[in-house]
Image (cartoon, rainbow, N blue to C red; front, side, top):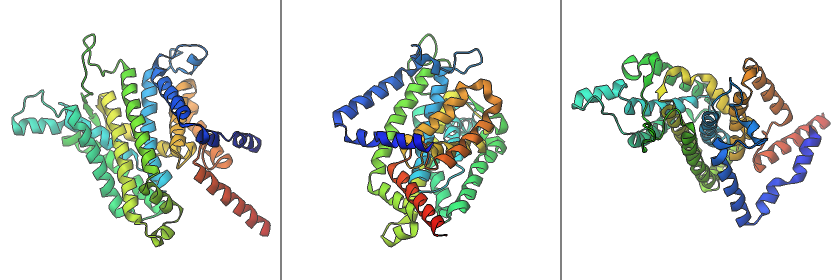
Length: 379
Protein backbone atom coordinates (compact mmCIF):
# COMPACT_ATOMS: atom_id res chain seq x y z
CA UNK A 1 0.00 0.00 0.00
CA UNK A 2 2.87 2.32 0.85
CA UNK A 3 4.37 1.66 -2.60
CA UNK A 4 1.08 2.53 -4.27
CA UNK A 5 0.84 5.70 -2.20
CA UNK A 6 4.41 6.64 -3.04
CA UNK A 7 3.75 6.05 -6.75
CA UNK A 8 0.64 8.22 -6.56
CA UNK A 9 2.57 11.00 -4.86
CA UNK A 10 5.26 10.70 -7.52
CA UNK A 11 2.73 11.65 -10.16
CA UNK A 12 2.33 15.04 -8.43
CA UNK A 13 -1.07 15.49 -10.08
CA UNK A 14 -1.94 18.43 -7.84
CA UNK A 15 1.23 20.31 -8.75
CA UNK A 16 0.79 19.57 -12.44
CA UNK A 17 -2.81 20.75 -12.34
CA UNK A 18 -1.84 23.89 -10.44
CA UNK A 19 0.99 24.61 -12.88
CA UNK A 20 -1.12 24.14 -16.01
CA UNK A 21 -2.07 27.29 -17.96
CA UNK A 22 -5.44 28.77 -17.07
CA UNK A 23 -7.02 28.11 -20.53
CA UNK A 24 -6.04 24.43 -20.29
CA UNK A 25 -7.62 24.11 -16.87
CA UNK A 26 -10.82 25.79 -18.06
CA UNK A 27 -10.93 23.52 -21.11
CA UNK A 28 -10.54 20.38 -18.99
CA UNK A 29 -13.20 21.55 -16.54
CA UNK A 30 -15.63 22.26 -19.37
CA UNK A 31 -15.00 18.76 -20.76
CA UNK A 32 -15.71 17.22 -17.35
CA UNK A 33 -18.91 19.27 -16.95
CA UNK A 34 -20.08 18.35 -20.47
CA UNK A 35 -19.43 14.67 -19.76
CA UNK A 36 -21.35 14.95 -16.47
CA UNK A 37 -24.38 16.37 -18.30
CA UNK A 38 -24.11 13.59 -20.91
CA UNK A 39 -23.98 10.77 -18.32
CA UNK A 40 -27.74 9.88 -18.39
CA UNK A 41 -27.39 8.92 -22.07
CA UNK A 42 -24.10 7.03 -21.70
CA UNK A 43 -24.54 3.87 -23.80
CA UNK A 44 -21.11 3.49 -25.42
CA UNK A 45 -19.27 0.31 -24.48
CA UNK A 46 -17.25 -0.32 -22.41
CA UNK A 47 -18.17 2.86 -20.49
CA UNK A 48 -21.84 1.83 -20.36
CA UNK A 49 -20.91 -0.86 -17.82
CA UNK A 50 -20.95 1.82 -15.15
CA UNK A 51 -24.73 2.10 -15.56
CA UNK A 52 -26.88 0.71 -12.74
CA UNK A 53 -29.75 -0.50 -14.93
CA UNK A 54 -27.96 -3.26 -16.82
CA UNK A 55 -29.85 -6.01 -14.98
CA UNK A 56 -33.53 -6.49 -14.24
CA UNK A 57 -32.97 -5.82 -10.53
CA UNK A 58 -30.89 -2.69 -11.19
CA UNK A 59 -31.85 0.86 -10.30
CA UNK A 60 -32.86 3.54 -12.77
CA UNK A 61 -29.61 5.11 -13.96
CA UNK A 62 -30.82 8.72 -14.05
CA UNK A 63 -32.39 8.44 -10.59
CA UNK A 64 -29.10 7.12 -9.18
CA UNK A 65 -27.24 10.01 -10.80
CA UNK A 66 -29.71 12.44 -9.23
CA UNK A 67 -29.23 10.90 -5.77
CA UNK A 68 -25.45 11.01 -6.20
CA UNK A 69 -25.57 14.74 -6.98
CA UNK A 70 -27.95 15.47 -4.08
CA UNK A 71 -25.59 13.69 -1.69
CA UNK A 72 -22.69 15.61 -3.23
CA UNK A 73 -24.47 18.85 -2.27
CA UNK A 74 -24.84 17.43 1.24
CA UNK A 75 -21.14 16.49 1.30
CA UNK A 76 -20.07 19.99 0.23
CA UNK A 77 -22.19 21.50 3.03
CA UNK A 78 -20.93 19.05 5.63
CA UNK A 79 -17.35 19.59 4.46
CA UNK A 80 -17.72 23.25 5.46
CA UNK A 81 -18.74 22.18 8.98
CA UNK A 82 -16.39 19.23 9.52
CA UNK A 83 -13.58 19.69 7.02
CA UNK A 84 -13.03 23.45 7.24
CA UNK A 85 -14.31 24.49 10.66
CA UNK A 86 -13.52 21.19 12.41
CA UNK A 87 -16.97 20.77 13.99
CA UNK A 88 -18.20 17.18 14.27
CA UNK A 89 -21.89 17.31 13.29
CA UNK A 90 -23.70 13.96 13.60
CA UNK A 91 -27.19 15.41 13.15
CA UNK A 92 -26.85 16.80 9.65
CA UNK A 93 -29.82 14.75 8.47
CA UNK A 94 -31.98 17.12 10.54
CA UNK A 95 -31.26 20.01 8.16
CA UNK A 96 -31.79 17.68 5.20
CA UNK A 97 -35.21 16.76 6.61
CA UNK A 98 -36.08 20.40 7.28
CA UNK A 99 -35.47 21.27 3.64
CA UNK A 100 -37.67 18.43 2.44
CA UNK A 101 -40.46 19.16 4.92
CA UNK A 102 -40.36 22.91 4.21
CA UNK A 103 -41.36 22.48 0.58
CA UNK A 104 -43.93 19.81 1.53
CA UNK A 105 -45.56 21.78 4.35
CA UNK A 106 -46.03 24.95 2.33
CA UNK A 107 -46.22 23.66 -1.24
CA UNK A 108 -48.51 20.62 -1.03
CA UNK A 109 -52.31 20.86 -0.95
CA UNK A 110 -52.26 17.72 1.23
CA UNK A 111 -50.30 19.51 3.94
CA UNK A 112 -52.25 20.39 7.12
CA UNK A 113 -50.44 23.75 7.12
CA UNK A 114 -51.67 24.65 3.63
CA UNK A 115 -55.17 23.40 4.45
CA UNK A 116 -55.25 25.57 7.58
CA UNK A 117 -54.18 28.59 5.50
CA UNK A 118 -56.88 27.80 2.92
CA UNK A 119 -59.50 27.70 5.65
CA UNK A 120 -58.30 30.82 7.47
CA UNK A 121 -57.84 33.09 4.44
CA UNK A 122 -60.58 31.65 2.19
CA UNK A 123 -58.24 30.32 -0.50
CA UNK A 124 -59.40 27.65 -2.95
CA UNK A 125 -58.66 23.97 -2.33
CA UNK A 126 -56.09 24.01 -5.16
CA UNK A 127 -54.10 26.85 -3.59
CA UNK A 128 -50.63 26.26 -2.17
CA UNK A 129 -47.45 28.28 -1.87
CA UNK A 130 -45.69 28.30 -5.30
CA UNK A 131 -42.51 26.26 -5.60
CA UNK A 132 -40.41 29.37 -6.31
CA UNK A 133 -41.40 30.79 -2.90
CA UNK A 134 -40.84 27.43 -1.18
CA UNK A 135 -37.14 27.65 -2.07
CA UNK A 136 -36.36 30.70 0.12
CA UNK A 137 -38.67 29.30 2.80
CA UNK A 138 -36.65 26.06 2.93
CA UNK A 139 -33.35 27.95 2.90
CA UNK A 140 -34.44 30.32 5.68
CA UNK A 141 -35.86 27.52 7.84
CA UNK A 142 -32.66 25.49 7.54
CA UNK A 143 -30.47 28.52 8.18
CA UNK A 144 -32.49 29.56 11.24
CA UNK A 145 -32.39 26.00 12.55
CA UNK A 146 -28.61 26.00 12.12
CA UNK A 147 -28.27 29.25 14.03
CA UNK A 148 -30.69 28.15 16.78
CA UNK A 149 -28.82 24.85 17.18
CA UNK A 150 -25.39 26.39 16.91
CA UNK A 151 -25.82 29.40 19.19
CA UNK A 152 -26.12 27.46 22.46
CA UNK A 153 -24.05 24.40 21.48
CA UNK A 154 -20.99 25.68 19.62
CA UNK A 155 -19.26 26.47 22.88
CA UNK A 156 -18.95 22.70 23.23
CA UNK A 157 -16.11 20.82 21.59
CA UNK A 158 -15.39 17.38 20.22
CA UNK A 159 -17.51 14.51 21.46
CA UNK A 160 -19.89 16.75 23.41
CA UNK A 161 -20.84 18.70 20.27
CA UNK A 162 -21.27 15.44 18.35
CA UNK A 163 -23.70 14.10 20.96
CA UNK A 164 -25.79 17.29 20.95
CA UNK A 165 -26.03 17.42 17.16
CA UNK A 166 -26.89 13.72 17.05
CA UNK A 167 -29.84 14.49 19.32
CA UNK A 168 -30.92 17.35 17.05
CA UNK A 169 -31.23 15.04 14.04
CA UNK A 170 -33.40 12.64 16.00
CA UNK A 171 -35.53 15.46 17.44
CA UNK A 172 -36.43 16.64 13.94
CA UNK A 173 -37.44 13.15 12.80
CA UNK A 174 -39.40 12.28 15.95
CA UNK A 175 -41.15 15.65 15.90
CA UNK A 176 -42.15 15.13 12.26
CA UNK A 177 -43.51 11.68 13.14
CA UNK A 178 -45.57 12.82 16.13
CA UNK A 179 -46.96 16.18 14.97
CA UNK A 180 -49.97 14.69 13.18
CA UNK A 181 -51.75 18.05 12.90
CA UNK A 182 -48.78 19.66 11.17
CA UNK A 183 -46.84 16.97 9.26
CA UNK A 184 -49.44 14.16 8.93
CA UNK A 185 -47.24 12.12 11.28
CA UNK A 186 -45.97 8.78 10.04
CA UNK A 187 -48.28 8.97 7.01
CA UNK A 188 -46.22 11.77 5.54
CA UNK A 189 -47.19 14.34 2.93
CA UNK A 190 -47.88 13.55 -0.70
CA UNK A 191 -48.14 15.92 -3.66
CA UNK A 192 -44.93 17.81 -2.89
CA UNK A 193 -44.60 20.48 -5.63
CA UNK A 194 -42.04 20.32 -8.41
CA UNK A 195 -40.25 23.17 -10.21
CA UNK A 196 -42.40 24.89 -12.84
CA UNK A 197 -41.86 24.07 -16.50
CA UNK A 198 -43.65 23.39 -19.79
CA UNK A 199 -45.76 20.26 -20.16
CA UNK A 200 -44.39 17.61 -22.53
CA UNK A 201 -46.57 14.65 -23.64
CA UNK A 202 -49.17 15.63 -21.06
CA UNK A 203 -46.67 15.51 -18.20
CA UNK A 204 -45.00 18.32 -16.32
CA UNK A 205 -41.39 18.94 -17.29
CA UNK A 206 -40.16 17.75 -13.89
CA UNK A 207 -41.91 14.45 -13.25
CA UNK A 208 -41.09 11.13 -11.61
CA UNK A 209 -40.43 9.37 -14.92
CA UNK A 210 -37.91 11.64 -16.62
CA UNK A 211 -35.33 11.60 -13.84
CA UNK A 212 -32.56 12.95 -16.06
CA UNK A 213 -34.16 16.42 -15.88
CA UNK A 214 -33.89 16.33 -12.10
CA UNK A 215 -30.29 15.25 -12.45
CA UNK A 216 -29.46 18.18 -14.73
CA UNK A 217 -31.18 20.60 -12.35
CA UNK A 218 -29.31 19.25 -9.31
CA UNK A 219 -26.03 19.19 -11.24
CA UNK A 220 -26.43 22.85 -12.20
CA UNK A 221 -27.04 23.75 -8.56
CA UNK A 222 -24.05 21.65 -7.45
CA UNK A 223 -21.70 23.42 -9.89
CA UNK A 224 -22.87 26.79 -8.59
CA UNK A 225 -22.39 25.66 -4.99
CA UNK A 226 -18.88 24.34 -5.67
CA UNK A 227 -17.91 27.66 -7.22
CA UNK A 228 -19.24 29.60 -4.21
CA UNK A 229 -17.69 27.16 -1.71
CA UNK A 230 -14.28 27.48 -3.37
CA UNK A 231 -14.52 31.26 -3.22
CA UNK A 232 -15.52 31.07 0.43
CA UNK A 233 -12.70 28.66 1.30
CA UNK A 234 -10.09 31.06 -0.08
CA UNK A 235 -11.61 34.10 1.61
CA UNK A 236 -10.95 35.60 5.03
CA UNK A 237 -13.79 33.49 6.43
CA UNK A 238 -12.23 30.29 5.07
CA UNK A 239 -8.85 31.12 6.58
CA UNK A 240 -10.54 31.81 9.92
CA UNK A 241 -12.21 28.38 9.77
CA UNK A 242 -8.86 26.69 9.13
CA UNK A 243 -7.28 28.55 12.04
CA UNK A 244 -10.10 27.47 14.34
CA UNK A 245 -9.84 23.88 13.16
CA UNK A 246 -6.12 23.74 13.84
CA UNK A 247 -6.12 25.39 17.26
CA UNK A 248 -9.11 27.34 18.49
CA UNK A 249 -7.27 28.85 21.44
CA UNK A 250 -4.36 30.02 19.30
CA UNK A 251 -6.82 31.45 16.76
CA UNK A 252 -8.57 33.39 19.52
CA UNK A 253 -5.22 34.82 20.66
CA UNK A 254 -4.61 35.98 17.08
CA UNK A 255 -7.93 37.84 17.08
CA UNK A 256 -10.16 35.32 15.29
CA UNK A 257 -13.71 35.45 16.66
CA UNK A 258 -14.15 31.72 17.04
CA UNK A 259 -17.82 31.61 17.98
CA UNK A 260 -18.90 33.93 15.16
CA UNK A 261 -17.07 32.00 12.45
CA UNK A 262 -18.18 28.63 13.79
CA UNK A 263 -21.77 29.89 13.71
CA UNK A 264 -21.22 30.98 10.10
CA UNK A 265 -20.01 27.48 9.23
CA UNK A 266 -22.98 25.87 10.94
CA UNK A 267 -25.47 28.19 9.21
CA UNK A 268 -23.93 27.73 5.74
CA UNK A 269 -23.74 23.98 6.18
CA UNK A 270 -27.36 23.87 7.35
CA UNK A 271 -28.47 25.91 4.35
CA UNK A 272 -26.82 23.54 1.87
CA UNK A 273 -28.30 20.55 3.71
CA UNK A 274 -31.76 22.12 3.49
CA UNK A 275 -31.32 22.83 -0.21
CA UNK A 276 -30.39 19.20 -0.84
CA UNK A 277 -33.42 18.07 1.15
CA UNK A 278 -35.66 20.35 -0.89
CA UNK A 279 -34.45 18.74 -4.14
CA UNK A 280 -34.89 15.26 -2.69
CA UNK A 281 -38.43 15.90 -1.38
CA UNK A 282 -39.56 17.63 -4.55
CA UNK A 283 -38.25 14.84 -6.79
CA UNK A 284 -39.85 12.15 -4.64
CA UNK A 285 -43.06 14.24 -4.39
CA UNK A 286 -43.52 12.59 -1.00
CA UNK A 287 -41.89 13.01 2.38
CA UNK A 288 -42.21 10.88 5.50
CA UNK A 289 -40.11 10.79 8.69
CA UNK A 290 -38.55 7.34 8.13
CA UNK A 291 -36.66 8.73 5.14
CA UNK A 292 -34.49 10.71 7.56
CA UNK A 293 -33.15 8.10 9.95
CA UNK A 294 -30.03 8.76 11.96
CA UNK A 295 -28.05 6.26 9.86
CA UNK A 296 -28.21 8.78 7.04
CA UNK A 297 -26.25 11.24 9.18
CA UNK A 298 -23.51 8.66 9.69
CA UNK A 299 -23.43 8.04 5.95
CA UNK A 300 -23.02 11.77 5.29
CA UNK A 301 -20.10 11.98 7.73
CA UNK A 302 -18.53 8.88 6.17
CA UNK A 303 -18.67 10.54 2.74
CA UNK A 304 -16.60 13.48 3.97
CA UNK A 305 -14.14 11.41 6.03
CA UNK A 306 -13.51 8.72 3.41
CA UNK A 307 -13.30 11.20 0.55
CA UNK A 308 -10.97 13.60 2.31
CA UNK A 309 -12.04 16.02 5.00
CA UNK A 310 -11.24 19.63 4.14
CA UNK A 311 -11.15 19.10 0.38
CA UNK A 312 -14.31 19.81 -1.63
CA UNK A 313 -13.35 17.40 -4.38
CA UNK A 314 -12.49 14.74 -1.82
CA UNK A 315 -15.96 15.12 -0.27
CA UNK A 316 -17.47 14.85 -3.77
CA UNK A 317 -15.48 11.65 -4.36
CA UNK A 318 -16.67 10.19 -1.06
CA UNK A 319 -20.30 11.04 -1.85
CA UNK A 320 -19.98 9.44 -5.26
CA UNK A 321 -18.41 6.22 -3.98
CA UNK A 322 -20.80 5.71 -1.05
CA UNK A 323 -23.88 6.43 -3.16
CA UNK A 324 -23.01 4.87 -6.50
CA UNK A 325 -21.27 1.64 -5.47
CA UNK A 326 -24.17 0.25 -3.37
CA UNK A 327 -26.53 0.89 -6.29
CA UNK A 328 -24.14 -0.58 -8.88
CA UNK A 329 -23.73 -3.78 -6.88
CA UNK A 330 -27.26 -4.22 -5.56
CA UNK A 331 -26.97 -8.00 -5.84
CA UNK A 332 -24.71 -7.80 -2.78
CA UNK A 333 -27.18 -5.65 -0.84
CA UNK A 334 -27.13 -8.02 2.16
CA UNK A 335 -23.38 -7.44 2.47
CA UNK A 336 -23.66 -3.65 2.32
CA UNK A 337 -23.20 -2.93 6.09
CA UNK A 338 -20.26 -5.33 6.22
CA UNK A 339 -18.66 -3.71 3.17
CA UNK A 340 -19.14 -0.24 4.69
CA UNK A 341 -17.50 -1.36 7.91
CA UNK A 342 -14.52 -2.92 6.16
CA UNK A 343 -14.09 0.13 3.92
CA UNK A 344 -14.16 2.52 6.88
CA UNK A 345 -11.65 0.48 8.88
CA UNK A 346 -9.37 0.10 5.85
CA UNK A 347 -9.40 3.82 5.07
CA UNK A 348 -8.78 4.78 8.71
CA UNK A 349 -5.79 2.42 8.92
CA UNK A 350 -4.24 2.85 5.49
CA UNK A 351 -5.22 6.38 4.59
CA UNK A 352 -6.56 8.30 7.63
CA UNK A 353 -6.46 11.62 5.80
CA UNK A 354 -9.04 10.29 3.28
CA UNK A 355 -8.77 9.24 -0.36
CA UNK A 356 -8.29 12.77 -1.67
CA UNK A 357 -7.39 15.10 1.20
CA UNK A 358 -6.45 18.72 0.88
CA UNK A 359 -2.71 19.42 0.71
CA UNK A 360 -2.79 21.12 4.09
CA UNK A 361 -4.62 18.19 5.68
CA UNK A 362 -2.24 15.67 4.13
CA UNK A 363 0.78 17.57 5.49
CA UNK A 364 -0.81 17.67 8.94
CA UNK A 365 -1.24 13.90 8.99
CA UNK A 366 2.31 13.45 7.72
CA UNK A 367 3.69 15.68 10.49
CA UNK A 368 1.72 13.79 13.11
CA UNK A 369 3.00 10.48 11.76
CA UNK A 370 6.60 11.68 12.01
CA UNK A 371 5.97 12.98 15.54
CA UNK A 372 4.52 9.63 16.57
CA UNK A 373 7.49 7.75 15.06
CA UNK A 374 9.97 10.03 16.86
CA UNK A 375 8.11 9.63 20.13
CA UNK A 376 8.13 5.84 19.71
CA UNK A 377 11.87 5.88 18.95
CA UNK A 378 12.61 8.00 22.03
CA UNK A 379 10.60 5.64 24.21
